[in-house]
Image (tube, rainbow, N blue to C red; front, side, top):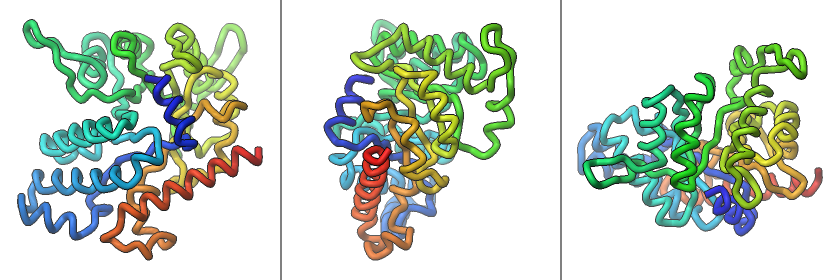
Amino acid sequence: MINKLVNKIKATGAPIVVGLDPMMKFIPEHIKKRAFGELGETLEGAAEAIWQYNKEIVDHIYDMIPAVKPQIAMYEQFGIPGMIAFKKTVDYCKSKDLVVIGDIKRGDIGSTSEAYAVGHLGRVAVGSNSFYGFDEDFATVNPYLGSDGVKPFIKVCREENKGLFILVKTSNPSSGEFQDRLVKTESAGDRPLYEVVGEQVAKWGEEHMGEEYSYIGAVVGATYPEMGKILRKVMPKSYILVPGYGAQGGKGSDLVHFFNEDGLGAIVNSSRGIIAAYQQEKYASYGEENFGQASRAAVEDMRKDIAEALNNR
């Protein structure tokens, strides 16, 4: 699957992943009115509004980008109907030949981690049959329970030809409380914990290579470009998923160090900056009715911003 992601990035010229992180405050009134009119102001009504919102955005941008990243918490909050909307979104995006990164941030040990891996990336056995659960192409994984929380995911990825993005340095302001702590290493003295985790990601990745890059990638926030520069060297063959562009403060000029010299090696996420673009002053002229067109315009601007930054580095 890493090969497909790299090839689609080359084909679109857009190292961009759109975060499908719907919130009710983002969804235009006409969509909510239609969904609530049919199903009431219920969990089912909210889930239908989310699904229709996602679908229209995807219809307007699928030809411009290689991948999407639905964040599962935004669906889980609506219970079982929300999870159905998540699954419908995953399936619809795959029908448009988009790579789907399930932003699930799972991490546990033993059989629990294996169950998460099977549910999101693999097939679950039911008697003599087996079935895909959510069936994303990649999943985000929290490694801070150690290798026995990650290896079950790697095993399923190997079986299914899928991939991982492992949290190394996240974009949130308090990430440094733990991730920046200095830890003693035998070979290099005191080093930040995120570097140690990045080094381990690179080691896992060496054993699980695609044609150009490993299918074991990393998450490194756009809000920490200097750390991204270090981690790019630590993980030369790991694709880096870069959250934090746009609404969280990251911009194209912050991103150049996340990429290798070939212009590959990173894929940049924008969520609300794309899916709620119509609420921004820059795209307000599109109006609520044309929110999908506003999202398309925001993708085009993001693509130009990143391309310009890479060309000028």
